[in-house]
View (tube, one colour):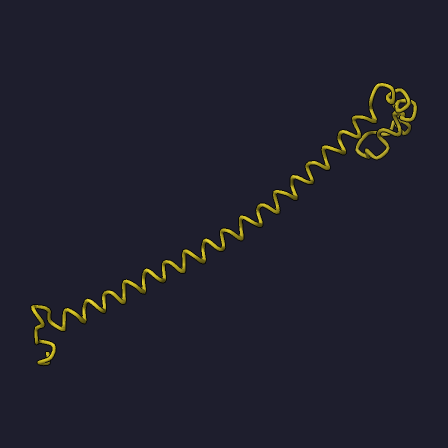
Amino acid sequence: MTTIETREIRGITLRILYLLVAFSVVSTAGIMTSYFGLKNDSQLLANQIEILKIQYKIIDQRLEKMENKKDTERLKNTPENHATNQKNLSANSLFADAHWLPNPQNSNN
């Protein structure tokens, strides 16, 4: 050690001051790194929350449309409309697009 480093100023050596400054700098750098990392993470979380809110609104709108569609279909099938609907529907027209059902016209039973 040099003579300056071994000199004491009221019981405090320069070596202890160097260590104190070095530890303070290292601690401050670590704290600042943690702070900015957490700040960045909180911004990412805020963005993710906004995205989830938008997705929630879209799903809610889709659900509302589906409920409205179901309500209109239910209103179409009210008892006063049911008789006219039954006249328009026959067994063949109900299952016209169901290709997995056996065709009664082609059965050889």
